[in-house]
Amino acid sequence: MTGHPRWQRAEQLLIPEFTGLFFTRQGTRCPAYELVTPRNAADLWAAAIKLADVLDAQLGDIQSRIPLSNSEWGRLPWVVTDEPVQWFGRFVDAVLDLADDAASGRCPIPRCTGEEVALHLVLEDITDSRDPALSDVRAAACAGLPGRNWDGNWQAVASTLFPDPRVRALIADGFDGIDDDYELVAETGIVRLAVERWYDPYDELDPRRPLPMCGCPELS
Image (cartoon, rainbow, N blue to C red):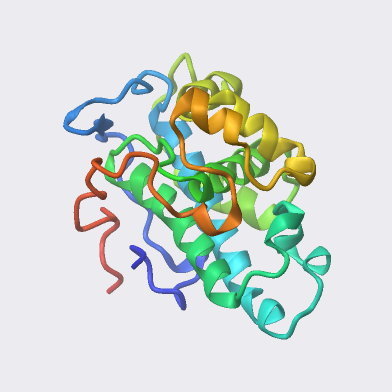
């Protein structure tokens, strides 16, 4: 389950109160709490919500077997091409889980490979996107928030949020034919990168996010 109904468009969501968020992870202060400033949290939330909005709207293309390269889904590694539409729906959930973390004051550190790929795309959109609709959502989310030294330092934010930088390097390279990196698994203990394992939690003992998953107010 996601924190936001699928039919709810990004522009309709009420913006969370990012100023008072206290980032935590597993009941302790988040290791990125200085880096995930109110403005950075707002940007992460806005980009994730907008990305999920676009991907969700294009799920019909997956069902119609339209090539991924013709949509935003083409940004995912080629190894996902033959997955069923339900798998892609779970990826939308992974993007929204990161948005829910940012909105609820939880550190948006990915808990599975799917969330790592999602975070990579979100950071790409923040740093490279020229989408005016995303710019509008980000501007609205950041309006009135106080400035901090780490605002906009996305390289530092990324280095803190990704559990293992080598995984991000694989993601950025489109996996380049890598289905399952057993050596990486043996070294780091993370789950395999095979597509059917993308949503397996890295730490099976780590409890799922607390409910409610999103701190956004309900729409009136």
